[in-house]
Image 1 (cartoon, rainbow, N blue to C red):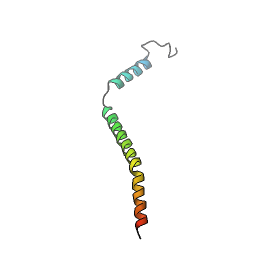
Image 2: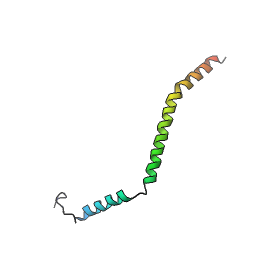
Image 3: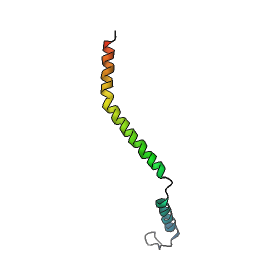
Image 4: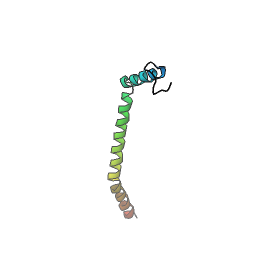
Length: 69
């Protein structure tokens, strides 16, 4: 019997269905996802800040280097 035509009491289908329902209801991984999103937001902010102030810092150091004896 193929899986497409299997009845609802087919053991593998029930196991997958139970796993999917448990995955949807389970909230244990929620904190991990929130921390991941927070780290991502902080990383994007840090990269944006570095890109924004990078040329100014490079210009400051080249000016300092040219003024040193």
